[in-house]
Length: 510
Image 1 (spheres, rainbow, N blue to C red):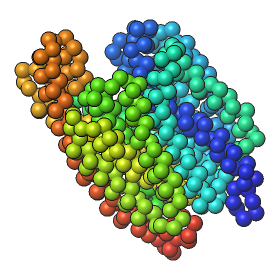
Image 2 (image 1 turned 60 degrees about the vertical axis):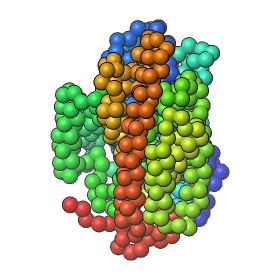
Image 3 (image 1 turned 90 degrees about the vertical axis):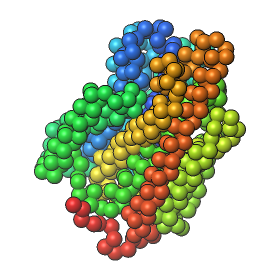
Image 4 (image 1 turned 45 degrees about the vertical axis):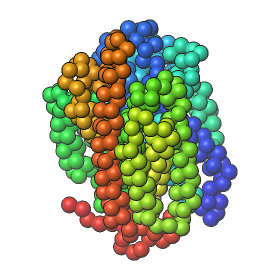
């Protein structure tokens, strides 16, 4: 129960622990199928297109629906939406676990994405209600951010461990008891909050939001994975055009889905910008780290995922350290330091070669992730504090959507830079599949005589690390630019819990 001084008590902290459980599952489900694809392919025999949709449908719908569901939760009740969303997630998990066809699994993954979007924004928005004290709220949001990142890391590992002993559907069943616990305990530990708003829910704005985010995320991800082709470019352009219509709708609607005046608050718009860049850095380079461990160092999927857990030690330290310093050090200094740390990590990656000790890439990846997650743990509090309490759901959902877009952009930009160098460095006499990707080179080498296979793999691995070096240099430049932007956008802010300077919070944007 909250004290008379506005500080959270035991019930609020227990409620936070409850909110972290569905947050963890939500993040884990993004990667829990990474190692299950071969088993699903054998059992359900999906086509190439169906296999792509099995993997991506969840994240596409999650990203597309976060903002509308955040706004809906502000209107009809955040706890109500949390309970309904977790119930739907548990049911969809059961359907996915026992799917007997590729299309049924795709539909179940779609339902999981919708259900995740229903309850996802409520987990963060309820923190805004439960922790009115700024320093406690910073600690709570730091825990939320850390669990979100930990879930993204643990998803492939948990999936791999389950596949060692059970069938692929078991990867979905871990969500069911968690969601049942949340449904049972939420009425006792979590407050209900519904904003006192008048007017109808903006259905047209919600449709335009979905029509913007889904094509943009699809276009970016498809271009990153498959390279340039007309269809994803056209889809991406269509999403941007619909986004222009959404911008007009948000400015002219009587009861808009999202109050665009929030973006005139420098703290809010700056925090979302910083969030996007941080996720660009972290998720963009995960692509290289996982491939380096599996295809250059030769580790199996489960062993590679376990080694990839080591950088999470730095992530945990960063969340705790940034949280402890938030009440003493100006946010601009913390954010600038986080981005500079990530720049150092990227610079270290530029020295990784096929024969490097495993310590170097893991240490570099840990520094990149620590800097990125540390900044996200700070900016999450800024987003919720800058937005009015009645808009916390939509505000938090906008921040989460920006993180999804940052992740997609990171994979697209850094992945494209690495792929271009790889193709340029490969021997023209190599088979076509080997010239496209390192994975193709490994597969091709398995069918060649030993000497030819060794030569092909050596060339491909050198080409891959050369591409990784270029991507790392791009990462350094982006992080240095982000550090400068964080300083300029956030230098007016004082440490968490201290009063802000007068007239420093709102700026008119054009």
